[in-house]
Length: 544
Image 1: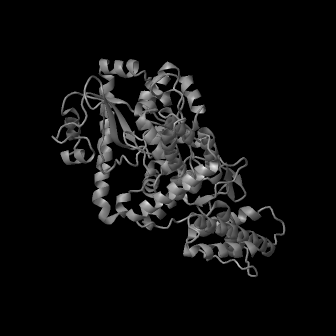
Image 2: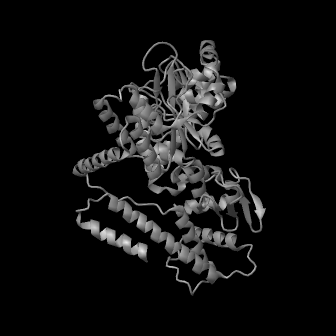
Image 3: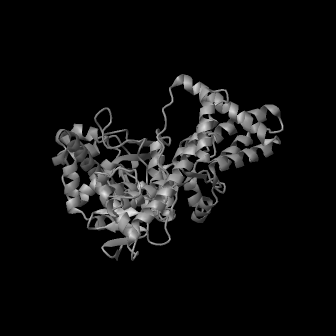
């Protein structure tokens, strides 16, 4: 794997890879630009062509071309490797040894799906009735049809099979690509075809809508060696540039909602393509933006989907909101057909997901009746348990208490009892694993600066307790940080700066430790054996 990475790096310069996403300008021996994550007002993104690395000072990220593509595209290392290998013209199969058979199968599946897409596109333009459905009934224009590679699968049971067999594909290869049904014929017949395109631009499957009457209305590719529905996000390939540029993403329910939205100018729309949202979906999107807007139906399924999203979003630092004002339309597609400007307006008029759900809970309850108040507080407090920010949770508790005309202290007492009961019930089912907490950004920045001073500033007097990394990419990144932070200093006093940074670092570490211990203390009962010990430890830290 290291040999493969090095060959790709030898063929692709860091400035060329980064330059596809960031406008870079010369700044001495380095290059400088604005953060692709839009978090800086002045250029804070640095690239060192000499070292082959990058560092974003505003977002506190850095690394080589692989880590950059992973971060900016929101993809895995393997996907970044394949994308960059393709750009560099490197044959990955030569480096995979025992994986050669799998690699060959994937390559053949991609080739088959790419040809199938072109075939379906050709079938669309040759069929007047289908063109009328796509262009007039679905109201898609030629540009949108071309962008999403919309096509048509003939009604004949073996039309695609015969075409691809003539191109040298075996039935086993077509089955592996998800193009054949259980009887060995074409999987898709007499349907409008829309390909599933991954973030690197490869077709990995299809979603197919029936043109007349029949079930299922939509037929999607099942999981294959290329396609995994729990990870795939429909439209992300087309949306990622707009998401990065404008800083938000809209998650709609249907694939046609995505296509209509893009045609209406809202190119930040994506969908989870016929499956419930997973944590992997949210993590992929969170790599691009933390502003996630849900455009779900207001029915029971939409409520459940929003509840699940809130449960998953809490630990990811996501700002989750809901688009709910469809101006009488049943979904975004119908609203866009009515007036595209109303869709754009609805996106701007989003409301926090928790507020939307609380309103939904109230719709079927009478909060003047005690049993309904109990039901309401049960579900509301369960929902608030997933709100991680203490200030935000406190505000919601006050809002709910006011709505049911009860002191907020009573509500919080009930919340504590429910949380305790939930934890006890959960403890019987599984043993809790300690979470690995990520180092907060401000502490990580201090560590980076201190390490850079230790290695490149020749610090000997100030104690800097971090081990010098052996990884060359990490060392190069630290050198870039050192040079950038000291490039405008005429006579830097590295020892003095290290002492000041070390004092700030120790202070922040102490604050963080007190916060962590306090959180642990809140989860214990006063009669617990560990309670007094933790309390003393917190007091000692506060005095020191």
